[in-house]
Image 1 (tube, rainbow, N blue to C red):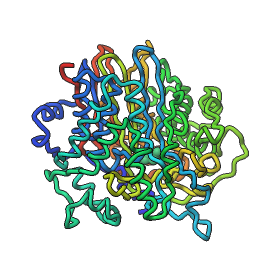
Image 2: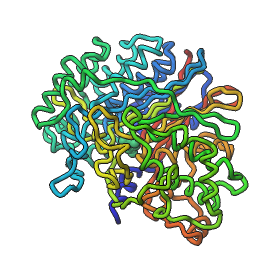
Image 3: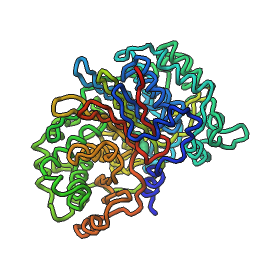
Image 4: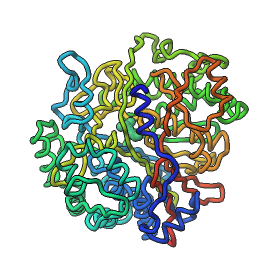
Length: 589
Ligand code: DON
């Protein structure tokens, strides 16, 4: 099995929800978990972890709004889902504010340290040193999560920061019962995590053995870090004791993040990338995410075809998806990067007439070959070589919605599962390996097989290009209708698009839209990833059309969505592809 397949098999696997330890998590949850989808009129939280969803729902029930709930959920996930929930990573939060009818994009992506430089991950032969890029002290960008969550809460929340942080502090200080999922995950990553003495101490028993399902995981250092964040309103992380602990960790192994880097970290509010599909408007994350741009671009291409008549997951439908994906990901490789460092041609890429031009290239009867597809705005780009890569990865998405109609769609990450594997000694949290999302060498793929060039090259203070696509969709009247997003590295954008198409074009419920088999294509490598459940007929016809199918694809993503029905009720859909996810309604607000 080639390496890229291993990535999909390991990163994206995870079957139906296993025997969640409901007894440990209270009778309320047992009732909620058994009713799928969860429906509510008073607010909803959907996340990858039931405990964290419950924290968010309780904040809603206490009078908090969607932003308070999102921040509380985000901090709780940093405790209960250490593989992806985080303090040491970064992410993106889309917020729709009901009263002002405004949608904003909060960018709290990691930034490259001031001492980072273009070739920092190249060895003496000029090849990319993947271990250095992914599993070393150099793999981490300056974390943005704490600044991002505090920014959101202070500017758009209604409760105090103390109130939304308290549940996470309590979970870290008093401990929580390990789910089968967390105990399996820690066991499977033992070798890597135990190489770092702090990670070994934080996530394994004193004798090095893994915690088992039903054991209690107490994280004292993390609780203290969270407390300092609470009392300093986040400042401690960037300029106080936590900042010192991060810098000391860097100094122990020659890492680059300095006090100045931490003090200079900036959250940026950006204008979302918005587009339309049929009579629905959607807003998603702009660069430094590639998500919003290519989501809108692909939908623009597809809007010109009668997808409904083709039939869901028919060969004709998948062919059109793939040909639009192929062209969007080709463009991604050349034009996308941090907009503060590279002039990303967003307007051109999401222009409907550019989409029409790309659509004309699609032969409805035959597959094109990726080697023949170049980034499309200019015809000057050279085809790039492609080497396949692998790694197990993890990111996490959560959506929140309150009774006033405020909506949050948030995706954040350490990049790979447990990031670089290195924890900040004394501070209790893992560091990201987001520096691998940069393009270390033109044409050389990162951990997701994605290639890039100058637009996404490493520069001090720059944010690595992301695929994270937190999205909010509006109904024809302009009211928010759907909040969704997913982990899945390069597959994120195509997964989010399929959820949107399932809901808008094929009129599925959000539960159906989430569960339906997904496909993915990313230009390079030139093959279609697909989930079990795709019909043999469709596969045979696709092969006849010239497509190459990847028969070893694992599960694609884990979307956590909230859909507002025409009757105003909220339907929460937790993706069952990975264990432990949960939709929780806010009761009696
Ligand atoms: O920002 C990105 O695009 C990646 N660091 C996301 C990683 C991810 O989704 C891993 N999850 N499976």
